Length: 145
Image 1: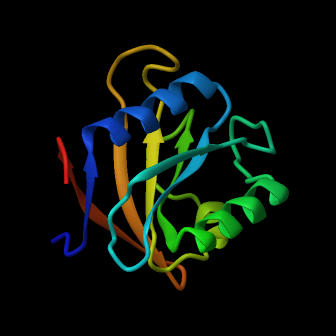
Image 2: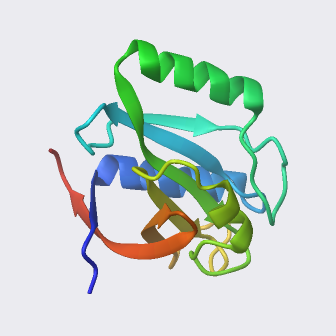
């Protein structure tokens, strides 16, 4: 039973998937910010994978600091933190769990393992990661909020 749910627009879903395909074979990563307290992802912020790795992602610390200052100024919070897995399923790795430090965020994983940079079947899954515990949640894709 999935008790939590991520509601996201088709446009934002498609932008995450497009970013994952564009960065393949490296992992893509980014944030979708939303108004504080609303749990509504609105502002798509693709980030650079500073690790430039097919098996690991790391936000550039300068970019991340800039993003958090920007969100603070706009009264936003990270609603979705996303990244891709290029060779495995869309499920958080031990490393992903270690770096998950936003208990209120939806952690979205996209797998490009089957299709790579091309159109094709891919996984798009969302999780809550709190105190090392992973909980998958339902994803509802809507045309608009």
